[in-house]
Image (tube, rainbow, N blue to C red):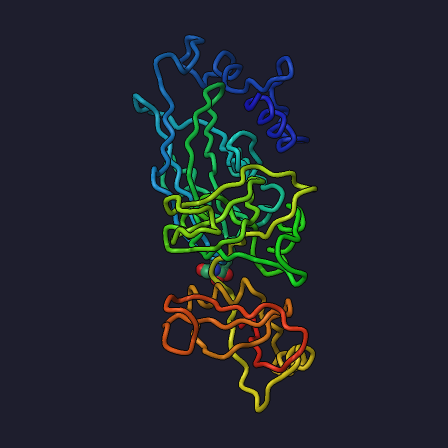
Length: 361
Ligand SMILES: *[C@@H]1O[C@H](CO)[C@@H](O)[C@H](O)[C@H]1NC(C)=O
């Protein structure tokens, strides 16, 4: 199945070129060549008798951050070693959350390659070393984390390895303007995107829980489950169970309403507290950022600045969604609880505050 879809793709890739041999709808290039034109050993034998193709990828996940250029290493070799180099095809794909279906990232035959979907124009192969098939992804996006398959195809031999890419980031709970438990799954995804973030995966939430995240409202996760992280067990938050992630399990994506956990990684640009002589309304705050060549910061941007640049400011300020927050990296008296964090005052209907702006550079 996998091979067939690849074959179809390769045919599209090579369309109009080269008169590729075609057999029964399959693309048996090497086998035909081996029989026909001396790419084999001259006795008409198929190459792969006793020769194994081995694909190697790193066991540990690659850690990076948003905006980075990253290489996913992949190498292949033959056992025993072959004297003559062989024509191979390389295919990179990305596994979906449930590890079943895959999405095409890049396919290469010789010097020709093609990238797909959101990877178009952002990926290329690195083949500096002999038998290297590494994938370079540039300007990494929040959605790019996950597992990638490096597949090497030599005729009918098809071997692959998996590389896991993880983003360093920060998970934050999000509740919209109109209150607690107002988002179905689709709205939850959108709410995160509006804050320059993505809906968090269970792994991301788990990692944040290990780092101390404690939140007593249940939120959607990418896999369609609803969960919340508790570090300090207490009665209204799942009772006296051990600390952990409390789960409501999978919920109906259209009919059930909760908060959401969002994930953001490092920031391009910067978030800053605008120096301004007086406190502002939300409208005035928006204008003040614009006058400064910036825009109101989004919640995900404030969290990223707090997490990655230790933004620390004990002044409450407007954000783009109409909430009032401030980031504390170095806790001290009169600046909220004793742990570092982004403090929130919710969404005031009126009142004047400072403002956090965001500028790309
Ligand atoms: C990534 O690569 C592009 C193109 O080669 C380059 O312009 C950019 O500065 C690089 N970004 C980083 C973060 O290194």
